[in-house]
Length: 457
Ligand SMILES: *Cc1c(COP(=O)(O)O)cnc(C)c1O
Image (cartoon, rainbow, N blue to C red):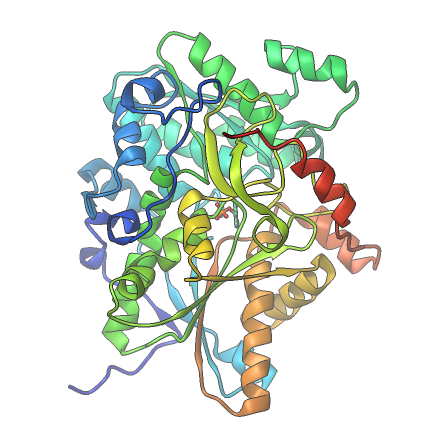
């Protein structure tokens, strides 16, 4: 059969939207380690997690055996507003680099929230509504997750309480206002509205907050209010499951046009976009059906994979959440203040952590000035202004394409372009003004943080 000519932008038909999410855990030989109760260190089951998360999401979280979960019709209806998302052949970037490599990117920024996070937000809001809940609470750092969740909650008429890391609340007033347009209430964290917030403020007056603090506050509120649950935008197994929609669409588009990626690249914060993008491809790899190189790209200022420890750790600062086994920098680790973008979480998805520990995936850390150089080039030649997070993947894709230029290899490189950067202009301003700096934590700083990992027996 003749291959179809590959267009610049590959759009699947609406009728080709995947109808089930793929659960990579079902095919993994070494399963990700279970969540543990922070007090007893015993694995947490359905009953233990129910007070925090919606029932259906707890089932998804704990299920390591079911390979496919049907996507409910109401979620598919919402997906239709912005999916299928395009797979773009980056012809202009290839030309600018003079590389024989073929470069493709899956673009997830074509919705109002501006990132892939909406794929899981709508699923989590749907299950909360189906359970008859009044609302959900969450944290947001850079603001993309809070924006996505507020859109999803307004669609299902659910209350949405967002704890926003104080520094972002102050520096990104427009993100905050988008959330309010969709009806969410937004509180800067740490706040006086929770016991843990008051405790953190007492210990660190004037703190600019962290994701770990905001998580603790959101969990406290969810577990203390009748009819509320907590939802999280990354790291968890359920979030990777929902984000598999990215990889499934990408795989379908690749198969349709005979594209076979050699290298698949994604930025890694908590691991949800990368986990989603690679899932069907990694499934083939772990089943022995095909081989690919996978590269996780993280900031040198928050290097969970490349310099972290594979250990059980707290997911939040207040130590109210379950313990997760993951590559971690320690739950008290806060990236340096001159780190401009997201990707600042101390830990990493347990699924990706296990794949990395098993040698099935590579990781590399990149410095932010080189990330913004890549972002600038990408914006100028491909048109889209990328999110700083996504630009970590662009950096690595460009580096791989430049290697191909040296060796003459015509590799096919695929990366995830997770979002747009319109709300990140403070970071771009620093870059444009030439005042952006790089910071790499010292071994001593990391050791001090590792010393506070929970002692496991
Ligand atoms: C949140 C976010 C990320 C990082 O989160 P992951 O869970 O690692 O995917 C990357 N890019 C964008 C645009 C984001 O909003």
